[in-house]
Length: 106
Image 1 (tube, rainbow, N blue to C red):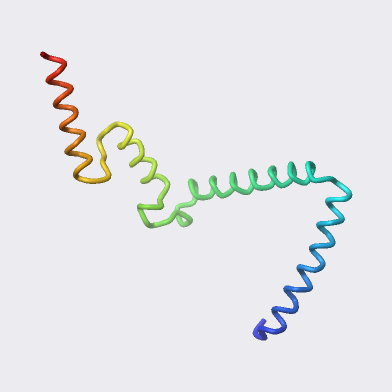
Image 2: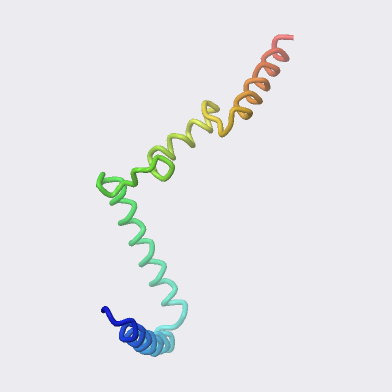
């Protein structure tokens, strides 16, 4: 729609109708049932997204900061102690390693 007024009116009407549909569903099915249906829905949709990101390379984010594989590898490196956030972290870790090694042999 090119007319902002028409878009705003159609959005308001849609919200108005959806509100009454939601009220009717809550009365008919109950909150707990709707919560369970919603949980199943978002679990399925997130599973499909996860599958898509891992199996379709055109959907992967180019940035290495957001890319899942690079982020996972970086977390593994941090856990192994082979990657650090800053140079100071690396120096402190190496100093602690040397101190521990000296204490071990003395």
